[in-house]
Image (cartoon, rainbow, N blue to C red; front, top):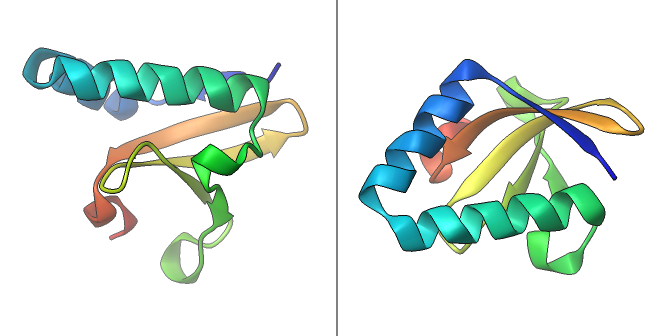
Length: 89
């Protein structure tokens, strides 16, 4: 199982989503659990990022929302941000 470390800003955004959209919040938790157990699962559509955020990766929550993460080692990642495509900026 992958160990996930969360930034404070990631946790704040997740709490904001929980208050505003419970359905999206549940979908996020489901995808995080899937990632922890099978980080390369095809439903996640994980991919490397390029440009100013090279070295980071992203996986999909749904068509609109993404989680940006940074691999620390083979068994741990750092979740940096969550949001729509604007998180790439």
